[in-house]
Structure formats: structure tokens, C-alpha cells
Image 1 (spheres, rainbow, N blue to C red):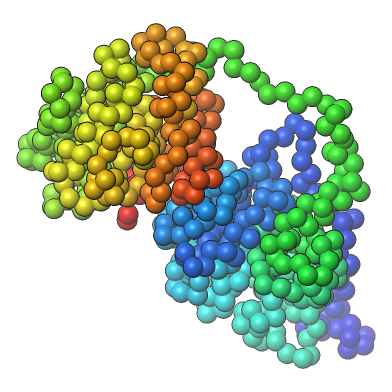
Image 2: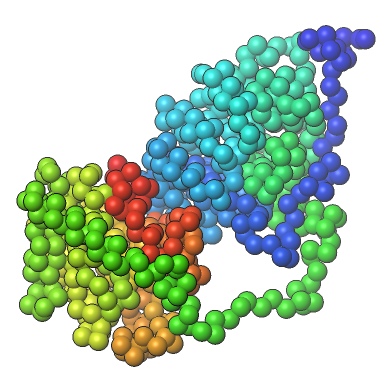
Length: 584
């Protein structure tokens, strides 16, 4: 054989096929009429710090535009506000280190992770990469993560070969040379270099350029040549990583996803024409994907006039909020809580670290319990109980202080006057008064967390109309609403309103989601994945609206948890809920 047809091992050199839709269209994740967003995949993108967020946002928005059902941008806490100011449909999650990333990836509904764009060249990126490769999710490794991988490539390549989920590496020539210095010579053409790299690593390798080579470990090889010269612009590679992630999350293998992503990337740029920037690719992708539907799945573009899209209506509002009816063994939970709480209080009183029944007002229920850590408190956590504003008191929940106490934070648990003894607007003011009084007992930052109706009350503390002292509100560092109720208008239709006595004006005035919050305080809305649909809707509602107002608001849906056990994580110092609430 001639030299041109023999590779470096003396074997026949693989010849790439031209990348075009016929190679992969029958496996493309076209949206189906019976599907839902989780069928279309969930992509997690890792963001850099506050001055390096743009690249990851390009990746995240490209993944969403390319068909991913959900996209979450995992960001250091000091960058959450920056990202929130630019994003709406993309969700946000705090992630400061590899441990928090591992906790996020416990959610099996996340299908693919993208790391590298704007992530940074420090050792933290190494840790994030290792945590990603140790997970079950597919991984798209780009940019800074590729540069860091070059410092210990053999170890990472071994980790890639041992995992089942696909990995796609997307280097440009410079990154490829650092990753594979022995393949960076003039005797080896780009097709062979990409193929050798894929076989060595066990990953799909997409070697970017005007003639992009895409190689799979099993020997498949494609040449993508539809990219116009004006696609060579800052941020376009970040966009490509997001497109590939959406394809993998939708069910394509790494090679097909890389081929589909590269083709759509080039097609979008071609349709936009000269003068485009990476930000413009979002619009170009829409047209490129629409053209793919038109040529390979025309039935999906059937006019909306030919079909009627109806959402199921809630006809029984009491049932929609009836947790006891829908949670197996619901009646067993309150006595279990009370037993755990009583045992906890006994131990805390014996150690001299419980101050029970402190007053913040003169009414019978205007008291709070304060639990102290072993050393000087690092700050104050205030837990506000639920019970739909009509039931319970802090003595049922004392044990939930365990997690924050273990990390050195004092915990206050206020009681408040329940309906029908008080209207909800009065309860809001009582909670503000209780926080002000607890703040005099403990210095440092304040973190608020409330469950159900308590989630409503703690998020109300961020609304300017609540009479919370400015010097206290300025100390609030984080608010977590657990299965919180953020829009009270549905409660006008519930039988319990005979006790609550809400009217239309108060329902609006007391709904956090309908009010503008103060700026600068991050919010996490946390809900169990097995909760009733109305509680999941109420949870998602707050970040969607407040995020659009520039607030760093994040939604977390914890798999396998319902309304009565989603609070349990607070009693565990190592649970992601505790770690999200506190600065660890």
C-alpha cells in the first residue's frame, strides 16, 4: 500500500466519511408529541467565577436551544447573581467545589455535564473533572478542562476508559497538542491523529478546525466541512459544547452527538452569514434545527392550528394540596417528628445549649427556641415551621437544628399565632419580629429556611413592605424555601380558607412570587421530586419570576422526597440541603 493509506502502526488508514444528517438523523432526538422535558434530557453546565461566566452561559443557552428539556448552570455562589441577571429559562445551582458537584450529580435525572468553558486553569478544575468522570453522567470536556487534563492525561484517560457513560473531548489544535504531544507531528494527518486519540482515551474526539475531524474509539470517523470561515469567533466553541451536550442528553451516543452538533453548528453559522458573533448563534440554531425537522421529521412541524393543546385543569383544589391523602403512612410522620424533637431538646438542655421559650412579643405564641453550637456561633439560622398557617409549633421540629449546629451555627425556631387567631399578614409581621429578636442574641450572618407555609413566611422577609429592621435584613445571607407556598391565590378556592380568611387583596399582597424582593440576597427553592404537582409548581414559580428580576434564585428538586420527608436533610450535617443553606 502507498504511504498515504498506511497509518503509524502499519495498518490501513481509516478514511473519514463526510458528516451530514443521513449519518445520524434516524437517531436524532426529535421532540415527540407524547414526550415531556425529562425525555429530552437534562444538561448541567459548570460556570467559572463572577468575571468568567460568559462562556458557560453560551454553552447553557446553546444546550437549551438545541433541544435539551432542562439546563442547569452550576455556579460558584459569588457568580450566581451575575448569571441570574442574564438567564431566565436556564436554572441555576450553587457549586463551589467538587463535593457540591458530586451532590448535584446524585440527581439521576441529569444526563450530561459540560465543563471547561470559562472554568479556570487552577487545581479546582482538576477536582471538578475527576468528580465528573466518577459520575454516571455523560461528559463533554472542553476549553480550560482540556488544558488542565493535559497535566495528568494518562490518569484521566484511564478513568474515561473505565466508565460506561460517553465522554466527548472537543480540543482545538493547541489543546490537542498539549493533550497528545506525541501525535503532534507533520507525519500524521488530522484524521489519523483524531482516531489514535479516540482509541487511546476511550472518548469521542472532535478535533476542531475548518475541517473538523470526529473520531470514535470503535473506529468510526467523520469529516465535518460545513463550517464557514466567520464561525472562527470568540465563544463559538463554547456554543458547540452545549449543542453536543443536548444531543447526548437526548439519547445519542458520543460520536453521533458530536457529528450532529458539529453539523448544526456549521449550518447555523452559514444561515446567519458574515458578521455573526457567538451570541447570534442562538438564533441561527433555531433555524438550523427547524430545517432539520423539515427535511427529516416534517410531521413535527404540523401547524398548531391543526391541533388543540390542552393542559389538565385542576377541578379539586383541596385534593391538589392534600399531602396526607397522597403520602403513604402520612399519619406516622408527626409522632415520629415529635419523638425525635423531644429527644434532641432533652440532650441540648442537658448540655446547657438550649434556651427555650424566649419571647419576642406578649402574645401566647410569640416565643422562639434558640439552640447553640458548642463554640461561638458562626451565624444564625432561623427555621420557620409549616402547617399551612394553622398547625404545629417549633417543638415538633427541634431535631432539624442538628445539621446547622454541627457546622457551628446557632438555630432559632420561632412560634407564631396561627389561624384563625391571626390573618396571614399578621403572621408575616410576627416572623419579622422574631427574627429581629433572635438577631440580638447571635451575631454574624443570618440564614432563613422555612417549610411549606414557613417557606412562604421566610421568602416574605425579602419583600420591602415587611417591617424588618434594615440592620437585620442586611445580615441575611441566604433564604431557602422548602416546598414553599409562593402564590396564595389558589388558597382562595380551598376549604381551609374558611379558617385562613384570605380575601383576594390579601392573597396578592402576601404572595412572594407577585412581589418584588430586595436585591442581593440569594434564594433557593427546594422541593421533593415526589411531591404533589402543585407544590412543585409553587416551588418553580418563585425562581422563574424572581430570577427575571435579577435575583439569584435557584430551584432544586430532590429525587425521591415527598412533602413530609424533604425536611429530613436539615438534620444531617452532610446532606446537600444543609450544605446548600450554609457556607461550607
